[in-house]
Length: 86
Image (cartoon, rainbow, N blue to C red; front, side, top):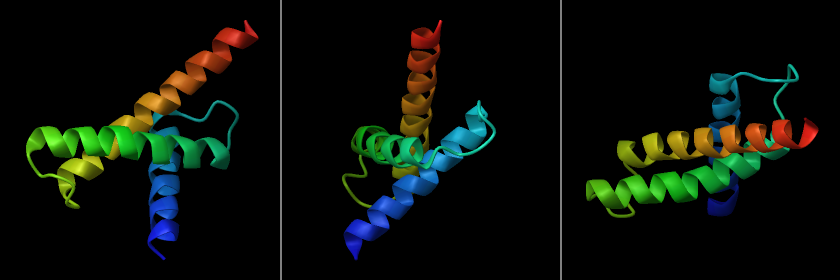
């Protein structure tokens, strides 16, 4: 059950990152949403939680870090795809 919750949380964070940055093709790319959400949550959420001193507890700083991490991963992916297409 925890694994499904983590995947769902990552997917929602990744979809939110795509909505914040804008959708280049008009819809949400759910594969990118899951990957960006999970990677961004792991890197950003864990890093911000540890820097703020919250440890690995579920706190607001981890959620903010998750969103920032997903934004960075999504922006990096859009940059990479745009670079390859040009």
